[in-house]
Length: 175
Image (cartoon, rainbow, N blue to C red; front, top):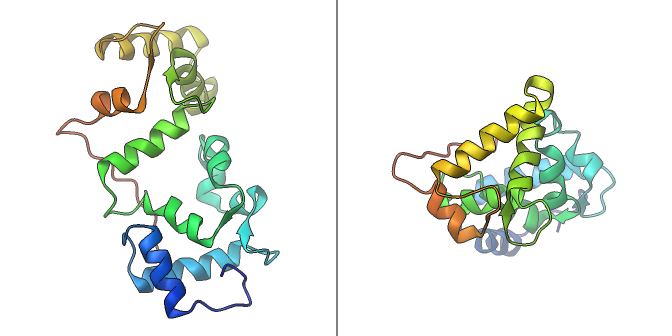
C-alpha cells in the first residue's frame, strides 16, 4: 500500500478507514490514495518533506516547517490519519491536539511562553516587532490565567481553547 503502481484492495481501504476512526468514506480514501500516489513521486510508499512542499497550500503555510516534522516520511495510512484531523467529522479535541503538537516545539508535552512566541514569530514574520509579539503572548497568557513562566500541558491547552463559541473549521478538500 502506498506504492503508485499498486492498487488499494477492499481490505486496505477498510484498514485505513479503521486507522482514521472512520472519518473518511471509502471513496474519500480512494481519492486520498490517488493524491498520495501523485505526491509520492519516487514510489517509495511514503511522502518526503520535499514532496509535501510541492503542495502549494502547504508550502505557503507559515507553519509548514512545524507541520513537516509531523508528516515527513508518512506512509499512506499515517498520511490519512494526519489528514483526518482536518476532516469536517473530526472532533474539536482532535483538532486541538494537532494544534498543541504544532505549538509544542520541543516535543516535551508542554507549551511555554517561548513556544508561543516562536509560533507567533512564524505567523507574523516582519509584520510585528519582537516586543509586540511578547506583549501579545503575555496578554493572551494573562487573560487565560497564566504567566510568562508557566508551561501548560495538553489538558491545560484544551481548557483554554475548548469553549462553546470556538469553531475550528479547517478542512482539507478530498476531491
